[in-house]
Amino acid sequence: MPSHPRIDKGEGLIRTYDLLQELRADIDAAYEILETDRQSQYLRRCVVRAVFSYVEALIECIKVELRSTIRTRKYSNPLSAKERETLGSLTIVGTSHRKFLSLEQNVQRTFKLAAKIWNIDFQLSTQDNEFNEFLTAKWARNRLTHPKSFYDIQVTDFDMHCHTRTGMWLQEEFQRLFQARVSSLRKYSNSASSSPGS
Image (cartoon, rainbow, N blue to C red; front, side, top):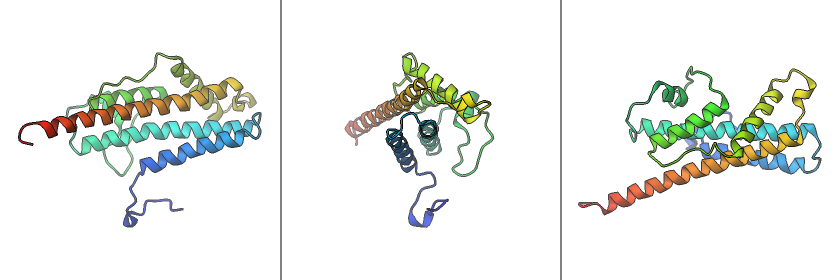
């Protein structure tokens, strides 16, 4: 498997669809294997890592689309310093030195910025229990990835519930965001084709 894109074969630099599909398959595989031994801490940790890889990639994929919208001049209004900080560099290749955002800040700001840039009626659902479960899952994931004691790497049944709900909640919100975007593009396309002189 190549570690870099094969541009000569038509591969994209990021391949967001492939990225999300592969990580979603990792989650499915992790849960399937966990079914063979539900008490295995190793298998539980595999699920946590798979879920949060997907979550982090999902947010970055939204940003890729937002940067593309701006680069292709489909959005030209100024962005605030906070919005630029959230979006990061507009360059396709290279890294930017951006301020670290907590995962919940990154999630909330990215979805809010998407609604603004794409001019769609969308608000991330944060009032329900899912958001609190996401915060709990994030806290448990942070313990797991920066362990200071044996207990930090133990994934409880409640942790598993929160990790599962986190993956489902963010996937649902991601789908809802893109459904709103597609609906907005359809309205724009229909109004453009029915306008006089078209």
